[in-house]
Image (cartoon, rainbow, N blue to C red; front, side, top):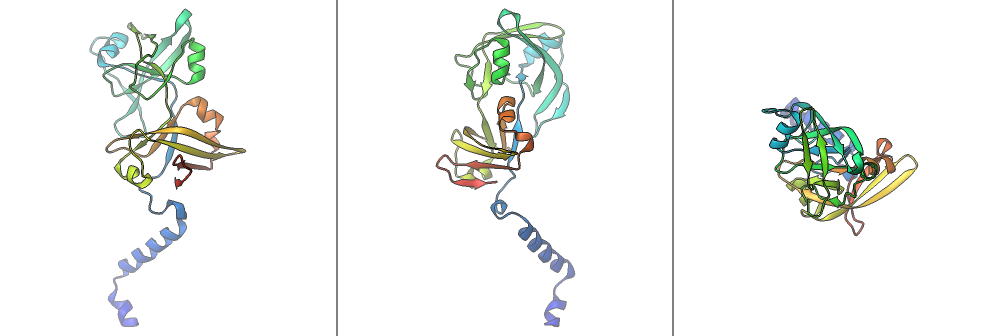
Length: 232
């Protein structure tokens, strides 16, 4: 026995012990999952084209990074705009997110749309058919959007490994079960948005986050519509 032990390098023994401890300490339902499940609140924000950035903030101007977002390559810009609805109802200092897009878009929560007097429909980001517009006011100019004001449909970003793990495809709907202080809630119709080099992340708006008391959540879980738990 001692000869066998002596033939094993000390670093190998330490690795074996470490792997066993990690496996035992890790929750059973978390073992084998490709990525941790993250749920973030997406507050009201604006996406802009390069052209609209220059109109609102000045010729030759580009977006300045204030803070990187969870998904690589995406960020909250230093720039903000005022969003103006019918009858001059205004929400000031709405954050611009980057990078720039091919079409400008405003994403609001339900209470935001009520405040502005805009009947914003629930849409997947980028789907502007039959959507209302608004006016954006920046320090250097004004842009009138004919469409593009939406309430973002709750969704989950998934990469290839997550799609395989959950057994879902782009466009499928899932349920999100959230356990928080005195409040266990299931949000249905969480649409899968697939992409390469994407981290597993659920986006809900501020109204939804407040309703489920996400700040005090102790457990979040994605479920298939038939109720099969996939991961915590």
